[in-house]
Image (cartoon, rainbow, N blue to C red; front, side, top):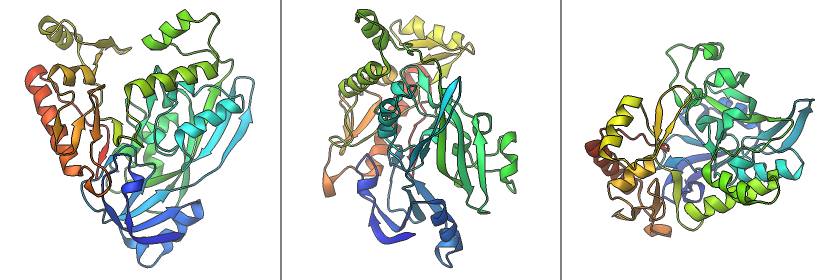
Length: 356
């Protein structure tokens, strides 16, 4: 267990916000978690789990002990007639893991290429892009109950996946235990994920439920391969979204809201060009980026925080180093956008990142 005091967190959040951790613990195995729990001082303090920092806004220095997840390792657990079961450590970079599965001949994650962050954070957020969500490829995960030290495994149903949601984003019920998970217990701040397993289906078929992918496939001379879809997704993302290494950001800052068909019809009557998608449950998903752009926010700034000029759904850091954006500036901009969208459309946008 490697412990650092007064550690800079700027390299560990993709927004590039300047902040420090009073104590940072590098977790490289399950044994490190157990050692931390047994530590006479650190074991009794509040903890904050940090993966790749791609879905977090730091509004100041972090007082809880920061658990920097760095558990590595990737392997094929099982191959059946119907699927490959692949496991990766929570600290593995997500995009590198997607590329690795393709290199091994185990396709299925290619639509999720270039999403920043770590493997362990993927099920927390139920990441998704270009027609595929993590829950579509999820098998199970291993985690440790930070309160009891008990190791446990969850399947997809127990993770209670929703749109950018899971059991790991909800607070535990008072007095609950890990065994309550099937009844919907929250695990936010209660558990740390150590390994994640993916079920990659056989036979492979391309997922082309996104208009740009469908267009490229129609223009191709031959059916796309998994690698071709991976390359297309990377190209699309790079054209629309800023590279966090160049322009700090946390990806899509707001969730796409869902409304009833009646609500959508009312908005269409006023704004016929609104981008919307029917959902299987009968609700209508609206494009949050379109709503923000329609309110005139693209390119606008608050201090060093700005709305990305190519995609209104992304907030970016226009500062550098010690003159970086502050978490306060980011949240001031975000709240102004929320107010603007609500006043025009009557819709409350919900942020995706965790605010600390």
